[in-house]
Image (tube, rainbow, N blue to C red; front, side):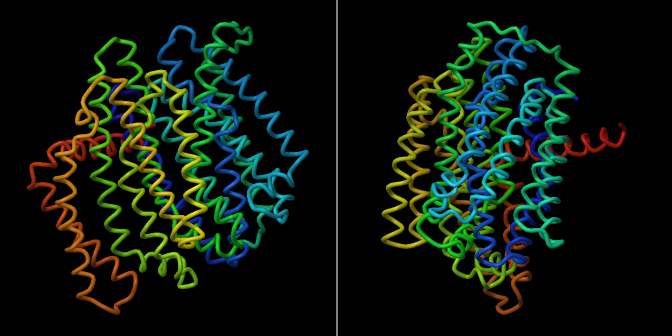
Length: 498
C-alpha cells in the first residue's frame, strides 16, 4: 500500500504504533508495582544504558538512508547492502568492547559495579534492535508506510508483552534482557528475509559512494548519539549522584507519554522524506519551511491538549498508576511535562535535509555541555526538581539554536517556520480550557483518582470539541482529523481484506 501524501505517510506510521500504546504504557506501570524501588531503579539504570547506546550502534548509517535512498533511487540495492555491511561491522566492534569491559560501562552510568553482569545483555539488545530498524527505514523510503506501521506494531507489542510477562511470572532482570534479545533476533531475521528478497545482495563497494555516505552519516550519527545522551542526561545525573530508589522516583516523574514520541517520530520520518524530495526537485526553500510550519502546528494542537490534561491531573495520574509510594514524583512530572508542547516543533530535522549535519553535531555538543553543567548545578540547588528544570531549559536553548539556523539556511522569515500568531491563538484557547478542567475537578473532591481524572478530561474535551468546530483557528486541524479518520478505517478495511 503506497501513498505519496505526507499526511498519509505520517498517519499510517502513527496508527501502526498507536495500537501498541496500551501495552507499552503498561510496562513501567506493572514493573513499578511488582519490583521494589531499588529493583525498579536498577531496571531504569539498565535501560538508561540501552537508550544511550542505541544511537551509537552504527553512527547514523541506517538513518542516513532517509537521505540517500530518495536522493539516489537508481542504486538502492548498493546503498542498502553497503549500509548493512558497515552497520554489522560496527555492531560487532561495539559488542566486543562491552563483552571485555562491562564493569567500565556499569561504573560510567551508575557510579557502581552492581549491574556489570547485566550490561552485555542490555547492549546486545540495543545493538540488535537498532540493526533491525533498517527494514522500517527502507519501507518508509519506499512509501510503504502502512507495512512499516504493521512491523512497528508487532515489534512494540512483542517487546512490551515480553517485558511484562517475564517479570509478572517471576523472572528477574537477567531473564527479561535475554527474552528481549530473542525478540530483537527475530526482527533481524525478518529484516534480512525482506531485504534479500527485494534487493539483490551487492557486496562490491564503490569507494566514492562509501566515502560520501560515511561523511554524511558520521557527523549526524555522532550528533544523534550526543543527542541521545542529552535526552537522558537528567537521568544520568540522578543515576550517578543518588541511589536506585531516588532514580526510580525521578524516572516515574519524567516518564514519557508514548503518544508523544510516536507522533514526533512518525511525522519527522515522513517529513524528512518529503523535504528531501522537494530539495531534489529544486523547489523553493519556502516549501520546506511550510512543511515544518504545518507539521509543527498540527502537533502543537495535540500536544498542548495532552499537556494540560496531564498537568491538571498530575497527582492523580501518579497515585493511580504507580501508587502513593511515588508521591515525590508529582512535582518532577509537572516540570517535565513542559517538554510535551515543546516537542511539537520539528525544526531540528531540517539541517538533515540540507546536508548540514556538522551543525547538528556542534549544536548537540553545546547542548550536552549546557545540560550537564546546569543539571549538576540545579541538582545541588534544588534536588530532583532542579534536574528536571535544567532539562527543560536545555531543550529550549537547543531548539532556539536550530530555529535560528533553519531561518538562515532557508533564507526565509522566522514566521514562515513557526507561525507565532496562530500558535498564540491556540494557546489562549487552551488556557481557558485548562481553567475549565481545574474547576470541574474541584467540584467533585474525594471521589477517587480515576473519577477525578475522568471528570476533568470529559469537561476539557467537551470544551475543546465545541471550540474545535466553532473556532476559525482550527480549520486545518478539522481537515486533518477527517482525513486521518478516513485513512484509519481504510487501513483497517484493507488489513481484513488481506
